[in-house]
Amino acid sequence: MSHSLYELTDEPGHMVYELLQDEIGLTAKSGLIAPFVGQTRGTEPGGWRVNERDLLSWSGGNPDTRAIVVL
Image (tube, rainbow, N blue to C red; front, side):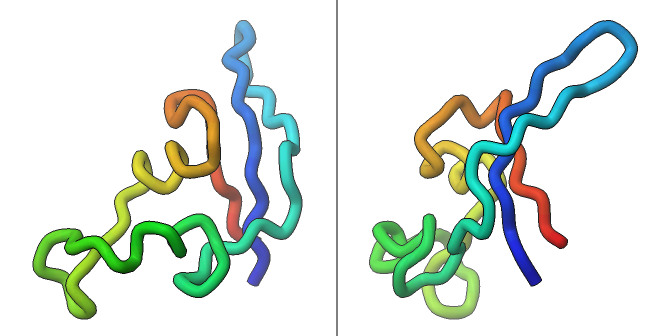
């Protein structure tokens, strides 16, 4: 399974996906969530959880104009 980061642009009649980074890591050891695993995030198993907005914010851009595509 691969994860890629895209910037989204809403153009008349369609959405444009621009590839920003191919094969991004999401793991707790070295991926986007790594710096936040130690923080308590609700009551999920393991003591933390990640929502989509947080994950996209951690990618360094505007979470409203980004998407992670899983293939």
